[in-house]
Image (cartoon, rainbow, N blue to C red; front, top):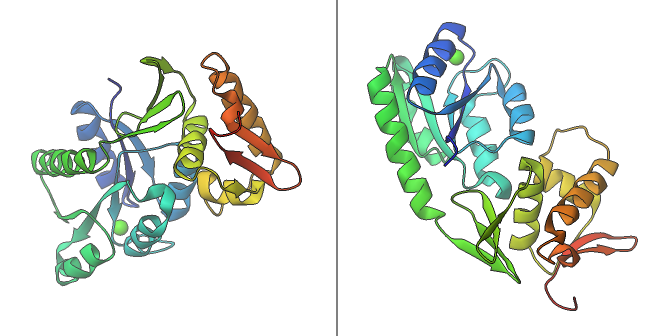
Length: 230
Ligand code: CA
């Protein structure tokens, strides 16, 4: 099993590095961002299991970032723990209202942090521990794996997210712009052609399983996932 991935969004370098150090030692893969902008950029290409988001960040508050992510269909299964300073403790309740799964007050011990992360991840896995099947494909959302007849189909992170999005929104047509928005995330400046490139890669990966035809091009409109009429 691959390591679970944690995104740390914290502008104070000492705290961020200390946290990253302890989390890697606990066996997690760690991504680091100093502000919300960097966090969004990392989220465009990575699918962390959990984000640790500091309350006070230079560009946007961590609470606002949490709200935005929790409202976004693509990130609704991302577990979020907010980091708060003691003075902000009274705001804890609104932190949880913003959609955070838990909060932890600074300064915290590494052991406490890891215990909290484990607890939140356990809850998150139970909530999304479902197999989505579509035709010959099975998507193991908890493990971020795609299977066909019990065999794993290797996909890059973007292809995985694209497929997951299309399968969970099957039979509907999405334009390239809509896919960029939903799969790559808003505020990401990539060309629409990028969508075509990843669709091509995804189809190629699905060819052996005979599932490439599920990804249909709708002329002049965009793409659709369908297991009918294939
Ligand atoms: Ca801060």
